[in-house]
Amino acid sequence: MDQDAKFGSVSRRGFLAAGAGAVAVAGVSWAPAGAVPWGPQSTLAPPPEFPAGIPLSQQAYTNWSKEIVLDSVWTATARSADDVVILSNWAHQHGYTVRARGTMHGWSPLTVVPGASVDRVLLVDTMVHLNSVVVQHGAPSTVTAGAGASIEKILSALQAQGLGWANAPAIGELSIAGALTIGAHGATYPAAGETITPGQSYGSLSNLITAITVVAWDESESCYRLREFTRSDFESTAFLTHLGRTFVTSVTLQAGENYRLRCQSFTDIPWRELFAPPGSPGRTYESFVEASGRVEAIWFPFTETPWLKVWTPAPVKPPESREVFGPYNYFFSDAIPEEVTTPLGMVAKGLQGTTPAFGASQFGAVAAGLVLTDTDDLWGWSKDVLFYLRHTTLRVVAGGGAVITKRSNIARVVHEMTSWLNERMTHYASMGQYPVNMPFEVRLCGVDDQGEVMVDSAGAPDLSAVRPRADRGDWDTAIWMNVVSIPGTPGLSAFLREMERWMVANYSGGYATFRPEWSKGWAFTEDAAYQDGEFLTRTVPASFRAGNDGNWDFALATLDKYDPHRIFSNSFIDRFMP
Image 1: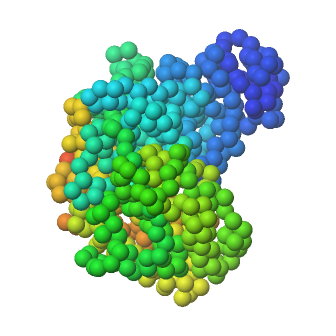
Image 2 (image 1 turned 120 degrees about the vertical axis):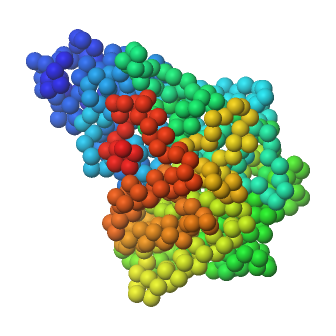
Image 3 (image 1 turned 180 degrees about the horizontal axis):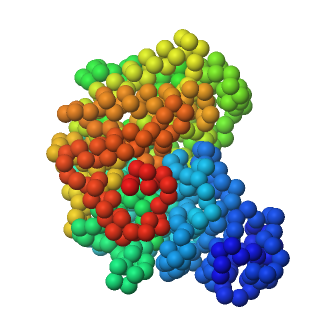
C-alpha cells in the first residue's frame, strides 16, 4: 500500500485494523486509495499496511509534568508479546520507530520528543493486556510480570504470598517495564549493622532482575524476535536499565520475605540541626540513618523545619503507631486545601514574591494533615507504608540526581547541598527572584550490589544511576537529591543549570560521583532541560566511565547490536546514546 494513499473518513477515537482490503474503524467500513479523503478529525496519515487485527487509534500523549503534550500519536494496543514482535518488524519494514507506552509518568523525553515529528512514531500500549503477574516460591522466590503490570499489582501479589521488596518507588501505579527502563529506586537503606533479607536489594529495582525478555534483532533470520536474557548472560547487563533502547515484554525479579515497617513523621526539627555537618549532636539526618536507614526529608522553600519521614523495621506494632492496611495514607497530599491553592495560583500567575507564603502554606498543610488524619506514626506491611504518593499529586518539574559515595560521607553530602541551596535561594530572593517554589527532597538507597543477587549474575545494570564504581568498592551509598518547582517558573531552568553544574563539580574526584536521575530533569540550559550538549555527550558518559569499567560503551554497543535499525529510539536518545 502506498504511504501517500488517501483513506476514508474516520473518528480519531476509532480503532484501525488494516489488512490488504477494506478496513473497519469503530464499526465504519472504509477502503484504501480511491475512496473518500482522510477525514478532518484525523491529524496523521494512516500507517501503511498495518498488521491486521491489532487495535490502533490516534491518542494523546501527556507526560507527568505536562511539558510533553502531543494531541495525537498512533497508538497500538499489544494483546501479547507476539504482537510486539509483529509491530516491531512492521516498523522496521516501513521506517517507523516503536515506543513503549505505560503510565506516562516521567519527565524526560525518553519516549517521545517535544517538537519532533511523530509522523513515523508508533506507541505501543502495554498496560491493557501485558500485565500478568505470577509468583513462584523457590530459592530465590521470584515474580514474573508482563511489561504493563504496575509495581503495586506486583507487590500486592507478592504480599499475598508472604513476600516483598525492600526498595520500591513512592508511586505504585508505575508500570514495571517503565520503572526498569530508568532504574527506578526507593528510599531504603540499611541501618547500622542491619542484615539484608535474602532475595531483597537496597539498590534499584533493576538489580532484582533474574531474567528479562526483550524484542531483539536476529541477524541470522533478518528480523526481530523475542529473546530472553538470564542474569548470567554477559550481555544482560545492558538491558537491565536500558533508557528506552529496547522493548521489554516481560521480566522476572527476585523477592524476599515480607516485613513490617513503622513510618514516623517529624515536623519540628530545624533544618540547620537536621542537615548539620558530620558528627554534629542532635536530631541529625545522619543519626536517623544510623538508627533506621530509611530516611527522607522534604524541605519546603523558606521554611525552618522540614517534613522528615523515617521508616524502621518493626516486627511488632509499637503502641504509639496506627496500623494501616493499604497504601497511600497521606490523603492531604492528593487533596490540596484552599490555603495552599490560593498562593499556588498566585505563584503560577507570575507573582513570584508570594513564594515564601506558598512554601509556608505547603508545610502548614502537611503538618496539619499529619495530625488531622492521624498519619504521623504508621505501621504496616512494607508495601503499605512505602507507597505514599499517587500519580495524581501536584505536577512539578524536578532537577538534581544521585551522588554515589561511601556511607561515612552522607552527612557531608547533604550538609553541602542544603547550605548551597539556602545561600543561592537567599541570594535570589534578595533580588526579588524566586526560581524555586516547591521543596528540596533528599533520600537514599544502596548501590546495585551483586552480593544481593541470588542467581548467577554477569554484573550490575550498566546504565543504572546507582551502578557501583568498579574502582571504589567502599562507595556503597546513593544519595538522591532533587529540587522541584512549578513548570514555567521564571528563572527555573537557569537555576537548575547552575545547581546541576555545582553538583557535578562538588561531588567529584576521590569524594563522590554525580549522576543524573534518568526519569527527571537534567542537562539544563538557561531555557530548558535535556538540551545542554556538553552534559549530554561528555558529562553523562564520563560519570559512567569513571572507574574504567567500560560499562557505558559496552551497553551502547550491545543495545545497538540487538537493535541495529534503531527502531527503539528517538532523536533525543540518538543524541546522547549515539
